[in-house]
Length: 267
Length: 232
Image (cartoon, rainbow over all chains, first blue to last red; front, side, top):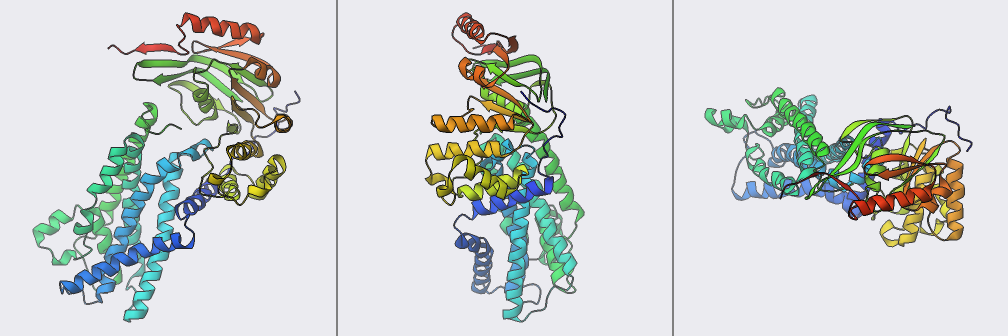
């Protein structure tokens, strides 16, 4: 044998390159239907907005803030879509991309991160597209405080990422839990302020709804978008703490699943 | 180099806990080709994943200096809906390889130019094996792990596999787990037996094969020793 043990070691791909490769692969596999697949990702939130606007018109509900109903609904539904799709995507990735763990040093955390970043990138495109179209067609102003809008969307993403990692870690162990937890989030559609604002609620209702972290994110977006609008439910600290708690729980669950070898799918 | 220090790897089943490795201490250097002879069902694949860093040990520590390969020929990373070329591009990014160099290597080695644009789900299992094998060797590593698969295809292809592996092993080490003593003799220069959760040094693989057969008989034809039986 003519081995050379004193030679330098072969390098691994750096972190950012691994994340980039995972994102590109995930995007290619998720939208394997080509252009129609991509379009579908952007059409889903548009169809949500369209249906809710029709619903508003049918029940003749006026928006609590003096803006077109399309814009009001978009500021509520888009953070919600970001939150939900980040969770769904993270739950899916840890199972469907598990064989990527053969290519060390890829870790479960990197699978989660790549998946969550892809959702964020998709939504940035969707948000720019939808708000631009609304501003053109309904002749509305742009956001009063764009930075606050970004903070609001960022908060929705962080909540989704923290809770998504938690659900994904549980999903490695139990398929039932992985399916059941997203189902329990269905009511979030009705209780997160998509159809109403916190200023319309009674004081006692505000105290209850305050514990819904997504409500904060949606109200942050509205505070940034609508000049003069101030919400009693728009803390950044609470949703971030909520996300951090679930992130830490997910680490403990992941450790438990690995150490006790309880993963439902073998590598 | 891969260094195991008091490494234990157990397998929990409905009947109890089976012992794959128990307090094993061993060093695999970058300048050697180590063959591990083990009977079927004794946990070779789990041990290969453990050595590759894909799985964790139940006890002890494993130190890896340098880049360790995944088990040679592993095909699970190839997504069935993506083309062979797309798979190679994404996996190259993940492993730190230049995608163009990887594609050129695979084309040259496995001669699969006609299937590069086809989705993996439409190619034959032999073509899939060839592309998985060539990708394993396209990635330069410091230690290669082989779990039964060390070559693929017909005689000519196996000759090319051997030649390419030899080229890679000029700068890297090999750990080859197999139940086939003849294959181990062909590829390795140091031998170990996996018996009762221990790695035992062995100079003569024929004697080693007999030892494993006796151990299996003593264990009532159970390839793995029960470490902790559940009470029923």
